[in-house]
Amino acid sequence: MDFLVQFIIEYGLFGLFGAAVFLNASVLLPLPFDLIFVAVAGLGIYNPLLLGLAAGSGAAIGEMVGYALGFWGSKTIEKMSSGQMQRIYDFKQRIKDLGTIFVIIGAFIPFPFDLIGVAAGLVKFSWKRFLIGVWIGRTLRYVLVATAIFYGVEAIKGFFVALV
Image (cartoon, rainbow, N blue to C red):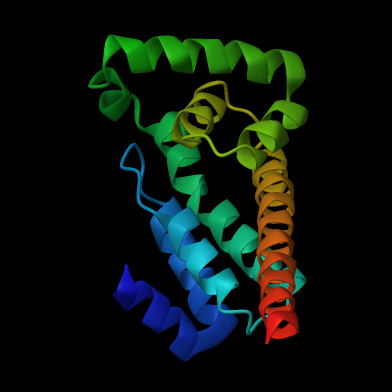
């Protein structure tokens, strides 16, 4: 994880974007992008809005891998456990019922999103609507997290400076 944080510090927002693409492209293998994002946001060297935009954009592109697996990868899907298949079936129904709203909500909450991407691909949900939904959900989430961390760290610094 330290390597990725150093990479992001060295390459700035482009590094954050690249890390978000790479770590969100891993399907069914949870990689700690959120932990890395929190560490970078905690540095306080970037504007929270720019951090959220870079991370949300990269995450949306990375999540297209899960969508593509559902769209084209039926043999890979057949190897999933029965529990994962049940969740995919449930998500398929919710995507059919709620569409982009379900994708936005799924991308916003801290939840393993890969199965939603696979389900969206399976039902041939519009890739454009999927990408936009993921972008909206993840960008909002990362902007809120970065803002909370940025102002939380500033408030804590202010508190300790006031004590001295």
